[in-house]
Image (cartoon, rainbow, N blue to C red; front, side, top):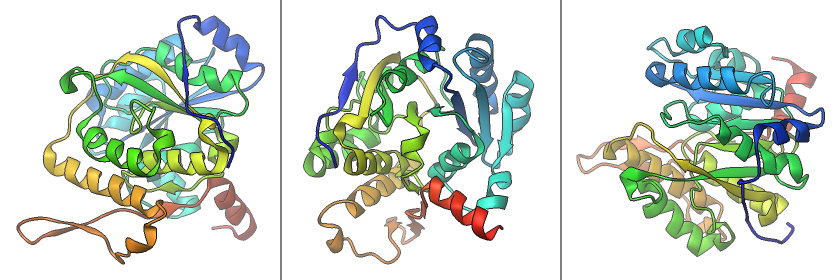
Length: 299
């Protein structure tokens, strides 16, 4: 692991023209993993298709994670290439969860750089893509650039899972990552050649795991953040957030020096009514490794 610290970039002098010039023959994929986002995905795809596709963005992929509301159809009609998750599972085997969808979108795309965006965002601006990918274009040692933003519903801070779970645990166990304003942000850009070397947690712990694994593999200076302004999206209820929080916590704790003390064979969230919700801590292997296995042995 190399040293350094998380980098915060000033984006005030960056524009689309400069970003396109900085590509220097390299390619950018924008991937949007979705499940039942028909109400928002059309507008999001249209903004990217009209402002970025063919210039900064070389391919726009919507990864449809078994939506039941026509998300795939809406995205396709708006101009995206839609990949159903079962198409990826046919090659690499099945998985489940947000991290699995991100991993699948990485497998389904081909850009040297990948920009991810959640499909439920309603405040998306095309300039986000420029800001997120620019540090990767300018600095060859950067692996991940996270979006930082204000959330008006949370008094401008992070979400509930971030402030009550991720931030306290990062402060205690991985303080090098504490400068990140939104460690669980769904809007971020990655360098394929570096991120394909990392495993992907299948569940909600994917973002925290990628940061920790990048920190340990490439050093804090491989991670950066840029200001995206204000972010608005659909909020989850507390019952859903408790599962998310538990998976984020369990994923982080598995990566701490005290992991030996975290010895649950089948970790679960226990409800007061006696029910148990299994936590999704399964991992997809580094994509570079998975491709080798498929090439050698086939399906």
